[in-house]
Image 1: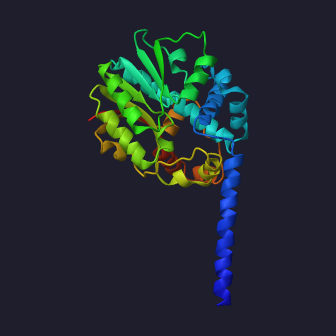
Image 2: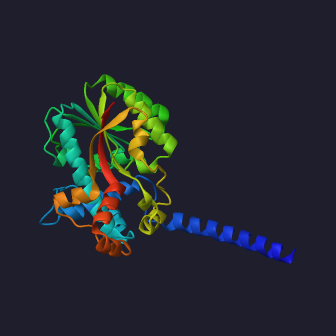
Length: 309
């Protein structure tokens, strides 16, 4: 009886400590909400843009990131690895956007656009219509920061509550009537959705006949739960990664999307001349089994251009 009481007490104490720990993490994490991640990612783009051998030029990124975004990038665990991943992601999605535009896309709809600057820095057709969709506070911030800047194409920003299924569905119907061949982008967005939310988004997008293409980045396989990922995830307690699917390409294929082009992180890193930072124990595994390490890395992170099935 005494042992059972002691054990019960220990479980209760452990649960209490865990709750205190989670509360502390949420109150002291670098990221306050999902919109803050846009400042964080903009800081990585700014770092890249200021290199002499920059893969892309983004003269607006430093201004958009601000002091807070720069601090997030500097203080985030495994910052070099995150910078590498974000630079490769940016370059890969640039490439997929160019592919879709070459297929005759007349409208780009960037969901959860955050502080993306592609309409300003990419070589885009003047007649292309680019629509950025995000929360009202993010749209207001971006409008103020970019006052006077001229985009390469037609640019419109729409402020809605992206967590509202009904608002998104209504917007998709309206935009669908205004285009003949649209590309949807959800860069960095799917990971913050639950599986049900991601499925609903996928179905709503596919229900619009003029939405022909969809670009997103994805993670899959065992490295989704690596130590490094968990440590970064602690700083995202207020904007947690929720999407949990071992095979995201198959997940969205169920709703009618088929893969048009699939790019992998290490292949893209080679293409742009960037090397993945060597982190323990990955560095040892990579040295001992280079071919297997490359296969594993490429299967874990990628960037996909879907088209309607």
